[in-house]
Every structure is written in C-alpha cells, then in structure tokens.
Image (cartoon, rainbow, N blue to C red; front, top):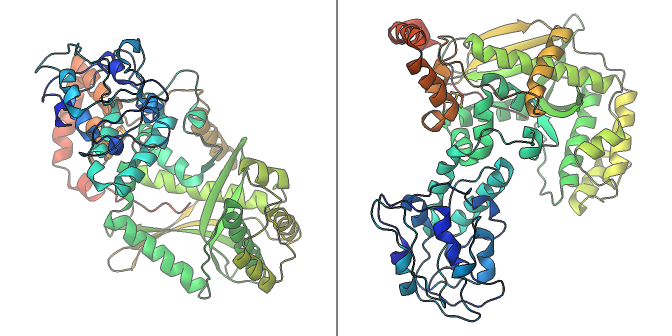
Length: 503
Ligand code: SF4
C-alpha cells in the first residue's frame, strides 16, 4: 500500500478523497487496511470543503500489508462534496496496486483521475473544526496507537489539529467540549490563558505529556504523601461504575466531616456545588481548626524554584482557594440538594454498590446500598454537622527538591469581587464573549507563551505578533520590551514552574 503515500510536498484536497468510499455493505478485500481504519466515529476527521491535506498527513493511514478493511469501516471518512463517482461496485476486489493512481504529483493539487470502478482506496485525514468530536476522536486514536504501535504516526494527525478553530459558531465552549460541570482547577488554568484551555481540549495528548513532566509528578507525590500521612488506613477499591466511584468519595467525605467536627485535620476534602449557575467540583488540600478556633483552608503548592510564584501565577491560586471557600461554605450551609448532585453529575440513584463497596459501607455502618440512599445519608450528615464556614485562606509553597517551606501567603477573601471575577470567566464558557489569550505586548504576560507547549502552533499568538509587526508603534514598544527582558535576571528567576492541579 505504499503507493498511497503522496509524494513529499504534494497537496491533496478533500475533493481528492471522495472517490475512495465504497457503498455501505459492499465487501472489499483489499490488502492491508484494517489497521488504518479507526473504530468508532471518525466524522471529525472529515476535512472542511476547501481544506488542504498534505501528504504528510496521510502516511499514517497506510495499512500494514495483509490487513482487511470493510467498506462500513470507511463511510465515516467521507469528505464533504460529491463522491459518488468513485464508489466501487458491490463485491469488488481492490488491490493495493489499484491505488497508485491516487497519488498526486509533486507540487500539485490535482485530483487523481483514475480510480478503477472495482476499487477501494484509502482515506484521508485532516483537521476538523469541532473540538468536542476532535477530543473524542483523539482519545480513540490514542487507544488505537496503544493497541497497534505501528499506528504511532497517527499522533502527527492530532498535532495538525492546532489549525482547528478556536471558536465555533452557535456553540458555547460548554457545549462544544461536552462539559456538564467545571472543575476549580480548570478555572485556574483559564485565568492563565483561555486559548491554552481550548488547546488542552483540541490537543489532549500535549496536555497529557505536560502532566507527565517530572515537576508535576513530584508535586503529585508530595500531595499523595501528605494525604496518606493524614489517612494512613486509606483503602483501595476497583470500582466498576461511575456511581461507585462517586459513592466512594461521598463515604470518604462523610468520614471527613465527622473528623473535622471532632477537631481533626483532614486532607483532600472534596467540595462541590453550584456557583453562578454552574456546577463545580474541587478538592481542598487541607482543612483544620487553628488554636483560635478558626477554620483554616490551606492549599499546598510545590515549587521547583526556591521562590514564591510570579503574581500572574498567584492570581490562579487566589482564585482557587476563594472558590473552594465558596463551595465549602455553601455545602455546610445546606445549599446542596439531592437533585443538584444527581442531575449535574448524571448519576443513577438506584444503582446498587458493587460487592466490595457494599461490604465497605457495612463496615462503616452506613445505612445505604444504593447511590441514592448514600446521597440522602450524606446530605443529612452535612445539614446537621453544624460546621462553620471557612475563616482563613492560606497558600503554602513547598520547595520540591528540599521539601522545605518557601513561604506562606494569607489570601484575602472578597466575595463580591470573587463572584464578579467568576462571572467573567463563566462568560467564556457560556459563549458570551470571545476567548482571551496572552497579551503578547505586555511584559508581565508575554513570557507565559515561552513556557507553553502550544507556543509554536498557537493561532492567537501568531495573529497578535502579526499585529505587532504591521503596527509600527507597537513594534517599537515590543522590540524595546524584548531587549529589556532578555537581560532581566528578575524576569528569569520568576518564571514559574508548572503546578499540580488537584481537582
Ligand atoms: Fe496562550 Fe501563549 Fe500558549 Fe497561545 S502560546 S495558548 S497565547 S500561553
């Protein structure tokens, strides 16, 4: 099937691909194509009319010699436009050699004209414009890559999705990325750069790679060690349903509410609830009563550098602890309802626990065997616990290598200001405004891009830099900023490291 690989530099348009789609139900016994056809919904890979697909995009679609592909597997790859002329006859047999006519010539975008009537050929790959389906397809492709290592070239396809639109008409980011609720750390990431949040959905493999960096793993280990320190008898379960997973959290939470009430320090305390009409989830690092009887909410942050973070980074941390307080306070003040919990998280109240979890619930003396019963019990505990609202918000920065304390910051809480800020962030998710990226002309902001994994492919940054080049005044300012910052020791020292999200 190597004949299907276009020459390097050739351009293939979506229209070129229309001829390759067999009739639904036809049987095609071409050579090795199975491995090329991903399972599931591939519609997001259909190029927009007029989009350009380069040969490089296609090499990963070449099947191994000997693989079998059925027409049904390929219908989802049909590009827009007229494709009827190239559909093979019922029962036609196609050999790899039949495909050679589809190879575009070097440097051309001409449509291959000779597709035999009894042939089936391969498919194209391109950039879709729907982030939600792209994200799903990305997951699916990664699954395929794991199962079939020879498909590793698929990874290149997802890189090309950087060209996908940052916004789509008539679809809010909540709808586009299939979000029923948000996590607190997601909002903190948003406070850093909204474009980066979007790329996180469009190119999840890049985000996953970031999360595997040693600084992040070390941060996670420190959090885990602290959690185990507070809860040495932690048990592990294999859960089979979403309800089981959430039930386990509620059981843990029920115990922590009692512990906190009894004056104990609790770690990794889940918080959730509705803020400004959106359901939020989060996990508070630490809650305890200090000597004055105040309830302290502490968030642990690890640092690669032995210095406090840049203000741009602290901004996200302040937002995080403020939102945790809003969520915790509303929980203990009885704002949480059964309906909220079940509806926003789409959980089934009649779902019985798995056998292991049932035994565990009995051991804890919980009067519940279904998720709904546990929710009722949990809400009872919460409503009658008489826990006070959080009095103090603290951020604690720990040096990763030495484990020593870099510093602590007490965060002021201003509810009106925080809620106004929150509404501003939610306006993005509700599609009420355009997403905002980094201000590349601002010395306090621009450095963020230099540590961003999407820097090279970021459309926002490219267009902003182009504006700078076109506008002479901006360029003079920008050049001044660049030469000034390159010599700035302070700037280099304050470049923050990636932090660990705990939600
Ligand atoms: Fe945001 Fe800059 Fe990254 Fe683009 S390159 S996503 S603007 S941080």
